Image (tube, rainbow, N blue to C red; front, side, top):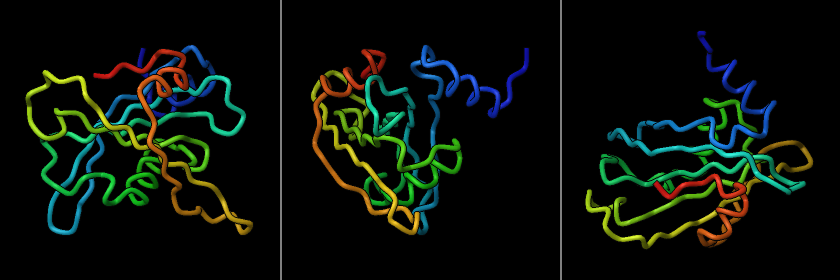
Length: 148
């Protein structure tokens, strides 16, 4: 059976049981360098404001600037590439020891969540930021989020 990206997205949005239907690498040009980050998408449970959680993992192999440096652009690019309205998702930027080296022995992490909205003219507003912990992320994804 062959599924297109549209078919996968249709299944993802139609059936909440697909807790993590998307796990991909996003690349973009950061001025003269090529930047990349891992992107995972989850359904949100019990939330009337947002429907998705997008986890953006900073990785040591990234040759460009961190995704958070270009947060608005990265969020809009992910939204365009995956057909996600940026205002309908929580955007979690994640750093671990693996963000800085290939040594993944530490379980310490930093999670910074961005939310975006729409103005009265329906233009996308700038992100609002909040530090969250892994317990909150686990709750939002109905314990489907995995730290690796």
